[in-house]
Amino acid sequence: MSHACVVHPHTSRRWLGLAVLLLAGFVTIFDLFVVNVAIPSMQSDLGASFAQIGFIVAGYELAFGVLLITGGRLGDRFGRRRLFVAGMAGFTLASALCGLAPDTGVLIGARVLQGLAAALLFPQVYATIRVSFDGADGRKAFGLLGMTLGLAAIAGQVLGGWLVHADLLGSGWRSIFLINVPIGAVAIAAARWVPESRAPHRVGLDLPGLVLVSAGLACLLVPLLEGPGQGWPLWTGVSLASAVLLLCAFYAQQERLRIGGHVPLVDMSLLAQRGFGRGTLLVMLVYSTSSSFFLCFALLMQSGLGLDPFAAGRLFAPCSVAFVAASLMAPRWVGRWGTRVLAIGALFYAMSIGALIVQVHVAGASLVPTHLIPTLVVVGAAQAVIMTPLLNLVLGFVDAPQAGMASGVISTVQQVGAALGVAVVGILFAATLDDGGGTAAAYARAFVWGMAYNLAAAVMVCGLLWTLVRQRLSRVSCAG
Image: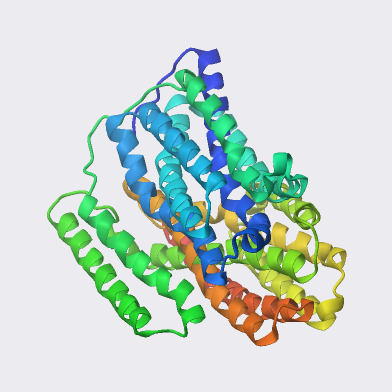
């Protein structure tokens, strides 16, 4: 994303504009999390298969992730407020389609549209704050954004659970999407307070690259979600092979652009840098454990143990509060003890996931959900200790002129990793559940096997973080 000089609209107008930007940031992240707590209700109401559940969750994440860099460039080129309004309008319309969807197919399509609109909208939030605020005001504005996104994650579980349980006007799970309609209307009407800005230099959009990477990731994700339920027919193998060819073609096309002096969608020389390449893999692994965890936990609590959505959502509240509290503390800890803090957080993350697996495995059908709360608190806090300083750690391996491109790559990898995590964990969860029927004990076993991937990913995160920390320390010592 191109850098632009800081603009200073009237002070009160800037802060009113910030409130509108925070509202938009809230709804896009809210919709990342809220769907998990509503999935069991959607499944029973629409008769959705496990593969379709995966598409409802991962479709939004994948569309969001793939278009993020292009969304940022469109804002730089045509005006960030203009793209903000277009993205918010698309997001509002797609939310209405989700809430009114007559069947699962329409819902999946609407979720993809919602993700595409979010990808147009979300980069404008970051970019507009960056060019509208600097110094102490900039730190305050980004601090408020971080807090808002953390609250959105909490609200996705607790408020989302309440909305589904309250069944407002008989809307059930549909209310989690329909609530975005009035919010979107307010944000669009108030967008006049958002200052308009553009990048000083136009950057190409690279539509061929966007098509190649989108098709490649779709060919990878679709068979992973659909294959298990269909017994892995021939088309799944063809699709996976096509994914490899398309992603290789994407790599070659990006390299041609870079060597030719053009700006590619992804600068592949970044990934060749040892620290950044490992960091990108690390980000993908960490975020692959997030949505998949929430999905499996919601299914265990609601479909397996019979909790209502609000009760299931409340179980996440202590975990989410711990995440926000640790997010606020993590930068201070890193400032005092260095990047070792991330590696220690990763160790606790792996241990807490392992403890959760053991608790569910031992208790089985007789599991008391509230007994998991202490472990969930550790999961949330440890995850925050990794995630909050992670971007700075990974971006520390690239030169300043490449920071904008690198940030876009990391933001995309976060969402793509989350989508792939849902697909992989879904394979393990669904296979175990099919073998055991729909009993509480079967859901407990399915949770254990699904979380086996998360445990393996967390252990890999530990190893990668220790090597990155050592590499970062060696760079600092050489620079000194």
